[in-house]
Amino acid sequence: MAKNFEVPIVSAMKKYSADGVLPFHTPGHKQGRGAHEFLRELLTAEGLRQEVSLMEELDDLHEPHSCIKKAQKLAAELWHADECLFMVNGTTAAVQTMIFGTLKEGDLIFIPRNAHRSVISGLILSGAVPIFLPVEFDEEFSLPLNVSVETIERAIKKFPQAKAVLLVSPNYYGVAADLEKISRLVHAAGMILLIDEAHGAHLRFCEKLPRSAMDAGADLAAQSTHKILGSLTQSSMLMLKKNFIDAEKIRRAASLLQTTSPNQLLLASLDIARLQMELGGREKISKAVELSKILRAEIKKIHGLKTFETVKNFSLDATKVTVNVQNSGLTGQVAEKILREELKVQCELSDAANLLFLITFADAAETISKLAAALKVLASRPQKKISLLPPILSREISLSELSPRETFYSPTEVVPIKKSVGRICAEEITFYPPGIPLLMPGEKISSEVVEQIERGKFSGGRVIGASDLTLSTIKIVQ
Ligand SMILES: Cc1ncc(COP(=O)(O)O)c(C=O)c1O
Image 1 (cartoon, rainbow, N blue to C red):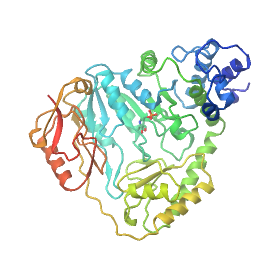
Image 2 (image 1 turned 30 degrees about the vertical axis):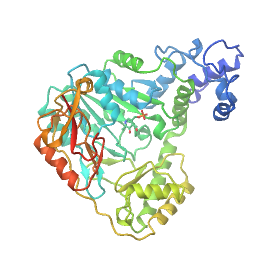
Image 3 (image 1 turned 45 degrees about the horizontal axis):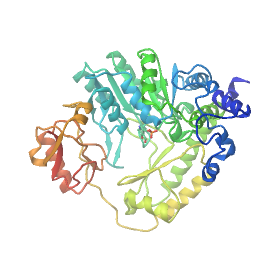
Image 4 (image 1 turned 60 degrees about the vertical axis):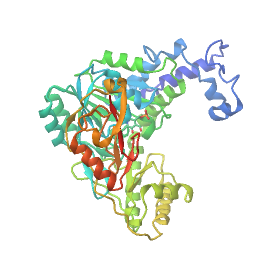
């Protein structure tokens, strides 16, 4: 078979299924024989026939030596990594592996204040201690951007003993950090660069998009193949460059954090997603970029809606189209509800001011024009412009007082917020907007942050994460 058409995992599954072996092994439905008709409808007879695992010829995710090893090697080559690990516990496990596989108890790591919860769970598992980095914010669109190069420079100067920098790039809205400059700074300081690239598995296939983490010099990148490319939900890839990383430790960490019964269909879907990108990735992703350009041009014609295609000081993944609905008199949440219930269009997410639409290679001129038409209807009901309050943001580069692991295991108590100064926070306090936490578990509560919380309370910002949403009280470590 020509290299281009190789799908090692899929081929091994087909071979096992075609062999006609009488199964006295897991799974209990025995290649579909005992499956309920609902399951058969969902997965098809062929899908169930191939939904087996742990057979010798299907390889072992935890000690890959045949088809999984080969499929991972093909993926590593395509994404310009030295090695790739297939993940069946989502990008959550890939992010946890990056942290758990590189840091130990007490090691310092820089993370953006609005990191995904998988980062915090990785810190709980490893015992590493976060230093929170401020995230830039765009007030016009009321949107979190990313961490600037200047912040990284300041951070490294302030905490030269840190071991790693973790960034989310691109973020949900497609805003990417300057990873090329940052990787040079990070490596020059003797640290490693870990990228949560959950939203960027497609970057490598189009020059018009921000550079991928691997191409920009990162050491590890956790990619949600399932979010943007064509694999099944829950399947992801972890890419690594070996220069500054102990690959064996990463493999062991991934193995510790993953199931011993990986679903074969998830593994096959990663193999197929790689094939799909290998055969036509450039055309597919370029098409998505072109379609998003057409969509933006249409949005610009709609009175009351705003979008953007560039972001000051950051690069943007054009396939993430943010639509600001403030001038149409709607909040993002109300706009999402109208789109979903009346116009049968579902966005990826909404916030106080925006809707986010993901354009992928699965889209076509027709889906784009339908979306543009729905947005026109949405904006056609004139209402008073909504004005949002200025965001309350932390600009500090601050070391957590207690590690997330110590905080997780500590007994907690609830006290009036005014009496919490000097104590250690045991929960996350976030106002929406900006959606960037003011306090994270393990952080010392300063009088400035209490003032910010009071200001946020009286300015009517929506609170998320807190056990007391009125913020009269706060949960602290005893
Ligand atoms: C930035 C980021 N990182 C990690 C994850 C976790 O990915 P998964 O849901 O595949 O576990 C997500 C999920 O939304 C995410 O947005």
